[in-house]
Length: 214
Image 1 (cartoon, rainbow, N blue to C red):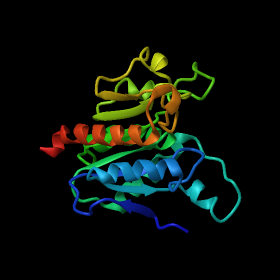
Image 2 (cartoon, rainbow, N blue to C red):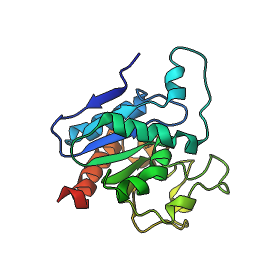
Image 3 (cartoon, rainbow, N blue to C red):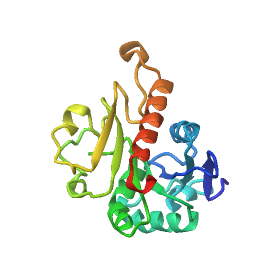
Image 4 (tube, helix red, strand yellow):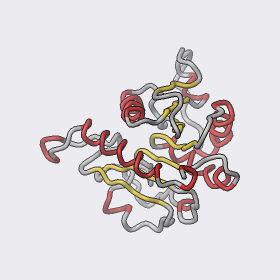
């Protein structure tokens, strides 16, 4: 059984990034681990945690995820338990980032977080582009960076460019990336390592521009 938090990166880093997992894979999945390692490599302290339904899968049956908004209190509890020193960025992979996005503004207004980082935001369920999960993103006031593959089945570049999103949201498009940000090298010329490196460097540059970093 993993610890409550999986921690990587320098303990005295200026920024801590707290990441939650996606709906179907745990905090120590290959994609989550690769993203955390990339962020730690550029100087972030990275903490990963698991929602209770996912943690329960390690000792019992396969519990389905609850509705995303039902996980908001768990995310807030993880923030309190982590007790990060210095500026905190919250976010996660897919559903984890979506949950963070729903609690971000209240926390940001209270000075609890510096920003929001979403790795592959689930703008809509695959194959159901009419079921948008963007309502709260229109009025978002928290500085936000979304790292999205251009062929992500949860929201391609062509689809997302037509959405009404807050001006506080920046999107890093990773060419030919899927929902795990992975490209097809023979088609794009990029490897997964290339995209993870680009992602990490972009997050670092974005974080350095946040108000609380001054």
